[in-house]
Length: 375
Image (cartoon, rainbow, N blue to C red; front, side, top):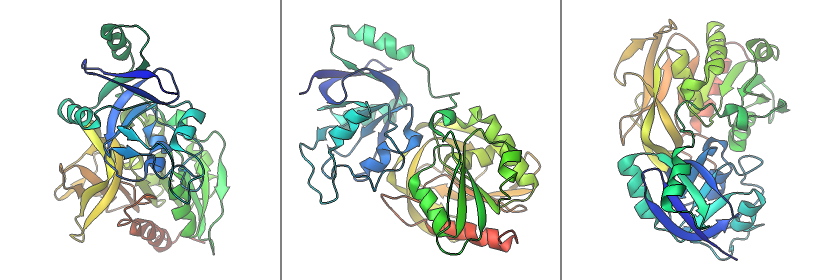
């Protein structure tokens, strides 16, 4: 059974449609995701916490849901907007329907709306607050007042909401090369699998971990994961990372981890107009001249010079921007030249594809082995 539901954007736009998933009211930052596949990975990616996701692909849900493709233990999006939800699943791997999982996770959605029009509004005006509401007699002005009274994404530290509460260990696949400290800021299962397959005993630590707790596992390297929120609100993780860099422990960060490396090195971060979210983003590797098609999910970026080598404002030696986004010249990677540390803004694990960038996990393994820290 469906009910009439409405989507109200912060700028006053309103779209009426049908309920999809749970019935209820949700307010968050509305963003669009351009992937034509991989919606299960999107929904279970903790980086989408606090956001209402609009799928630009019109037909969503046709392959159903399964336990193997989940990136975490639950769905994290605050709301879900699609045009045409599949009426049934038609894939041999499907165990449940998309609607089943949305209901089980209390995710409020809306369908039957013009997602192309919504996407164009976001592209022109930028990511903004929005709300999904049951049509219950309130006026548009009343819905809008609820949306405009909600917090914005700027300044929000969401890592504590998505991070593991208790640490755990994933054993290395094959011969171990040592313990890797992974700071869980919203880590995905595919990332942990990639690291374990490179011979690391993966110690997943909560975002509240201290430098002493991190060093207690005698790590051969440290990894910062993806995650939601504003990097300028994550001072604790920045200070921890500076302690790691001072000890010359090899470091690799992705997505949110790239932004935090940027801050640790002394650069500022800023909010993008509407962000990068999809599995088709072209990125230039400046070292090789190779263009990679990459998976993205970020609304913030590092403010650093994209040309040449600069000195770290925080005193960590020379730094270069290693990768650049070809759509908007956004910083897509950082490399410290006097320390064993690098990061990328995109997702090299990309379980839903593409797989152009998985070599970065091999580079991190080589960095650890070359640094003389591996067992």
